[in-house]
Length: 99
Image 1 (cartoon, one colour):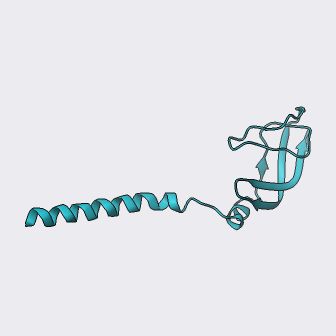
Image 2 (cartoon, rainbow, N blue to C red; image 1 turned 180 degrees about the horizontal axis):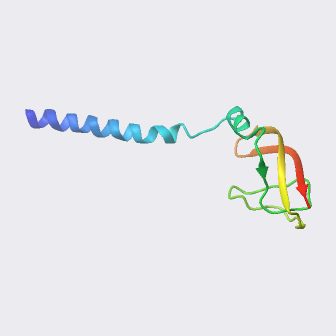
Image 3 (tube, rainbow, N blue to C red; image 1 turned 90 degrees about the vertical axis):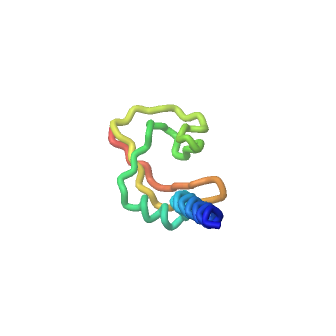
């Protein structure tokens, strides 16, 4: 009888540990207002320097469209709006370039 009680207690303990391990993963989803709060009024820098005003990136951060690279010392970004769609994060703002 004691073996049955300790095995069910062990199962509950393992279930509790697994639940606690997955809580941070479940909370990892961000909404539009959280992303906006983290990025607004922050210095943002673009990787690479492209001539086009509208740039599209894949989920890994690689440029999807063709754009001619230009030479800048630094290329920053002043964020104006954040929009989160089904599978897209749209950041709109003004590009700031130091040459």
